[in-house]
Length: 218
Ligand SMILES: Cc1cc2nc3c(=O)[nH]c(=O)nc-3n(C[C@H](O)[C@H](O)[C@H](O)COP(=O)(O)OP(=O)(O)OC[C@H]3O[C@@H](n4cnc5c(N)ncnc54)[C@H](O)[C@@H]3O)c2cc1C
Image (cartoon, rainbow, N blue to C red; front, side, top):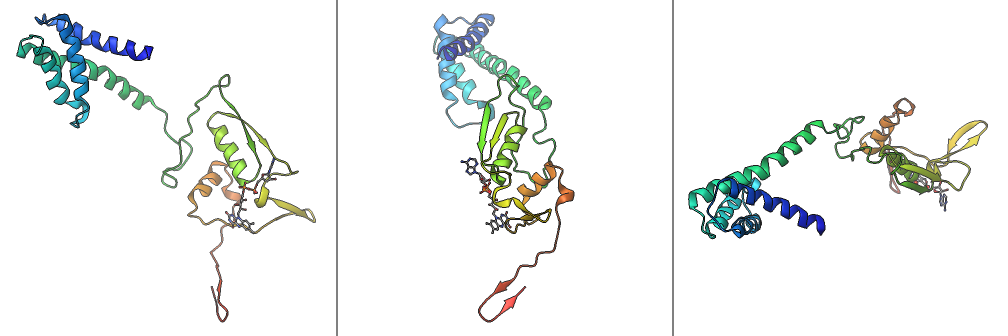
């Protein structure tokens, strides 16, 4: 609330300063009324940047307090430019200097994956506990850590992997259940790529069978 009041005071200050610099012959309340009217007018659907609506009603606000129409028009345009240019310049600067959304991923493969900005530094990063070290828990822990968060993963059994884990048969790991992905499972494929584990994936042609009581087709 206090910040809002402060913001409005500063914005009103812009209106009042421009009116003063133009030596507009208007009561002091005129520029503040102009602020309220021009800002309310931005609720009317119009062009980007409220070009037209903001200017007309800002001008109207000033003329209704006795200002000359030409002076009020210049006043409205100057206020609009003063409010628009600095914000747009700062936005453009941030846009140009911003980090790429997904620096390590191939956006052609997975355009919808969320970005991974390092949002938190070591002092402020939340500590997140993930319960369960199956595919879901491991992936969640990885994704969170990529976003700069501290993660502790708790797994009740001796090994991670859950249903997608394996057990030992004469020194060889054997999957608890059969597993495959299709190459168009783009999120899994992207994860494999991110983990630099592409060479560990075996690619085979799909051989899916379908049975009915009388037929079997592949
Ligand atoms: C027969 C079969 C075939 C399948 N084939 C495929 C396939 O081809 N392709 C595919 O994508 N998926 C396949 N799936 C599905 C896939 O295996 C599962 O969707 C996936 O492994 C589930 O992972 P999860 O992490 O959500 O759960 P889980 O693998 O069940 O992992 C949960 C983990 O949480 C742990 N845990 C539970 N409670 C606690 C607790 N209180 N504290 C600590 N740890 C806890 C468990 O020990 C476990 O390690 C198959 C599944 C089966 C059963």
